[in-house]
Length: 303
Image 1 (cartoon, rainbow, N blue to C red):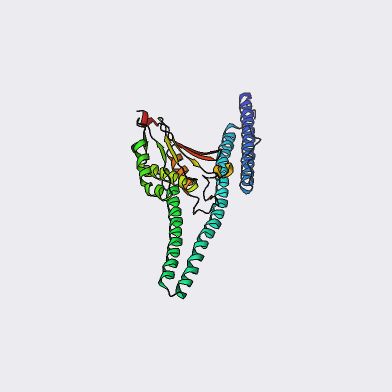
Image 2: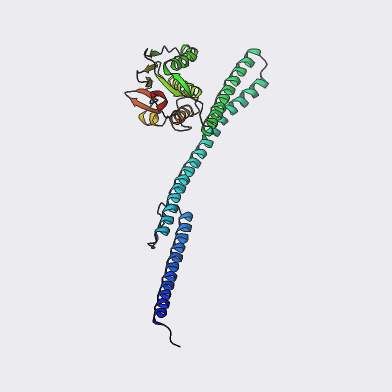
């Protein structure tokens, strides 16, 4: 039986197309295997290298590129988790030490109190117990606030006049200034600086900065507000060093100066500040510590 010439050509073309399709399927299968093998390897190793495939197929290369983007995000989160895990272990060690010291003192004074009969001695020991208990309360309160701040977004904002909020914050520390014999040098311009911020967060930031100034001051405190809204808190702190000043914003970092501290005050201030789009930094020069706080005008401010 004679097969028409045209049909032979058609069969040849179909056969060639089938071969091309089979070759294409083979290449796609090989590219998928490469992606699978490379993906498992990247997941099992702590590496920044990305998936590389030999296929030139656009779809498979787009798939590899998409997986590579997710791998980059995964590696970044893995490193953040590892860093956070190390910080958590250090924090637990520091907190355990901070809690153990006052608790040991409390137990010792209670033992002495049980053995003492004179009322004046009992009152003295009770005062010491009260001081140590207050120190524990401050520590646990700071830890509580830090855990809340790091897990809850500050979303409720309103129009605030920085001048007024700063004056209110300074007035709240009037008693602390008197107790430490510090007369703060305050400079607040008459020109109002308005910002769209969360009030409680801003009050917390200013309170922590003032408290930090009192903690490390050698007897003075300067609070200057510039016309653009920049706030500068500075004081003499000759016992600090530039390295220590650079670490003041680190979580749980404390300067061993015989002063009670949780190492969370400025870390909280920094986190709240950055969450609201602000900038904060510490500078140490010629024995003077300066902390600068600035909230740039947002679109709501300029509207």
